Length: 631
Image (cartoon, rainbow, N blue to C red; front, side):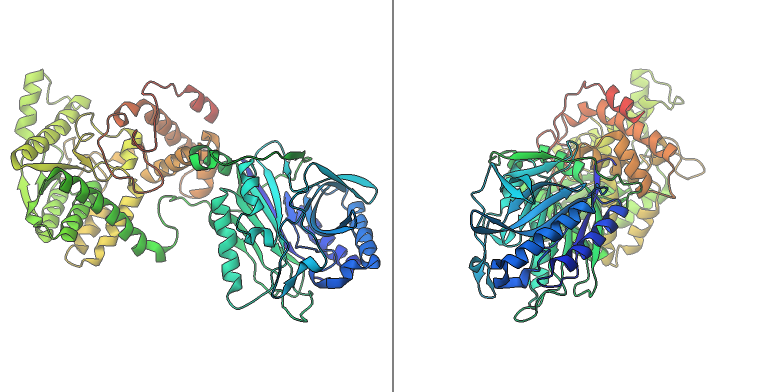
């Protein structure tokens, strides 16, 4: 389903040295995982025997019982398309290997040996096992079958999934095998483990899994031995973790007394295409691998995953202060460098009482505070025109007065009328010409005033407007430093709210946030805003959602629509989402010419549309195939 796969991390109740009992627990969990439409069910290290069997691993009876237990699982899983990855002790050439065996539909597809064998403190695996890190292009004779064997094995469904396997200590090594697996295309790493519990160890373990998923640009699934393992010298809590590209999306409660599993739906398609934009990934060294083709996998009937409707906004409210402080400092220090390099002391901002100019003013003010500069050198200019309302003008004025900046008012009505007269435009004709004359008049005033004052014009346009081309070319499209160019509209609202901690401006900010978004270029009606941007181009929360998924990993329009219907369930129906997605695609492609010559501005998040930073595209690209894909 759109590149999503449901993966299960299973913790079986262990009976040490009794493979038959362990096989029954494993089989029960495998059936449960299959019923839950999981593509893969991962089990702990040496799950059939128990990790703590110790010197019994050198005993023929245990190894024979293990083979019989594995044969039982194979016989009883012929109709199960869910892949089982099970810990197994394999005797080969009079050497014992700690392995993972991969099973689907009652057949063994491959076996991977452990590379790094711990032999310190409470771990003494080298007493029984040898490393398999040099085993490649080999086969194993296992229960009367020849099975691919080695650390060079990857498994794929020929669609979006390629997975590799490492075992416990492999993850803790200086160079984990998963690094090489990822370089060879694995976007899912499975780890069979037996990690004992120590104070604080589970937190470090989770961090290790999470950060490795980020380093590999992959999903990482972890299953560790649990209750039932020997407690002679150590205790095992049974830790199950599922992480995706630096975020843990599922984790169990340890010390459960019964067999159990957790599942998560992970987006492997997204991970594949994320890698295309990361040059560091494509530079990774590749090794020769063998790829095993998987059979048909269970399909997900319903996606069991929360889709964040605000992907640019931190999902945790607790992160708000830290994130906003970081954004503000990126903006402020970007401006500080530009102004100090140019030897400029004054900043000019067109202030409208809207979201964008408010944030630009607040961040500029922050820069001046950091440097100890005189805030009266910030020249805020209100430029009322035909559509300006008292509400926005008053908010702009009150905000400037509260911040102590220099405020100037220059009415553009007469200038615009003279421009209409010069180009022979009827002022009663409220066309795009009517609007753009005003926008360019404001920019002209700012530029000319900057020359007069020896100042820098601060651009206020945001990332969402840049994506949609919702600006007048060489009007508000242009500035000397585009301070908001890396911040989308949904995030701007979030950051402005952060400034409410300043009680002197809190009530002003509340009203600015409550004001409809508008360029105020068309005449007001009864003193109220008549031109609401979101009724013309659509809700910014939708466009920011579209932008994130389109740019971040090149998602197809159909997938973006599918995710949006889940994220905005109950707020926008599919027809409405499709309408605005079509408009987004059309405007995004046709308005590239504005981005090709946009002014400098700081990149703030992971997405930028600057042609000098993240996004390069010809201005005359055809967008027909994207519209057809959506249809």
